Amino acid sequence: MEKCDSSPCDRDPVREVTIVPSTKDPLSLTVTIHLADHVASCCVNADEAFVEFHGGGHHVHTAFEFREGRPDHFFVAALTVPAPGLYSYRIFAKILGHPLSREGTFDV
Image 1 (tube, helix red, strand yellow):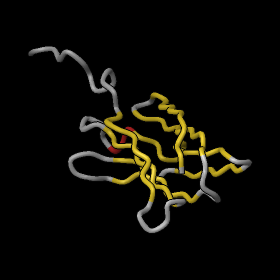
Image 2 (cartoon, helix red, strand yellow):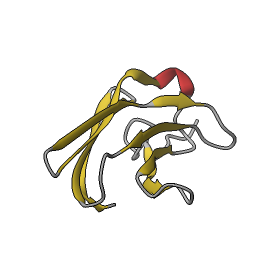
Image 3 (cartoon, rainbow, N blue to C red):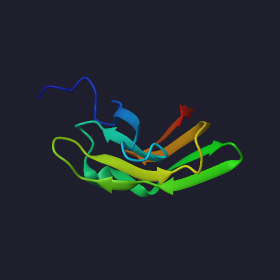
Image 4 (cartoon, rainbow, N blue to C red):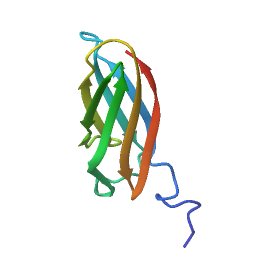
């Protein structure tokens, strides 16, 4: 029996994180965590996943929803910020027992 070079837990469980404004309302954002192909739906916990945006004296906090897909699964959060501007964001989720934390800025 051959030994694998890396187990699923050793590989990055996140393929990509995207923030996309709506074409109809630029204040409405969809944040998506695209999970890698090797992440099974039983290995994620949507109860602890959230995204928050801070900017211009505003704070928006929204939970992610887990969605199954083919070939991969993903977390999706839809939110609306109150005004245009530069926002700092923080994304948190627990995937394969490991925390995912991403921070950055987004100009709405």
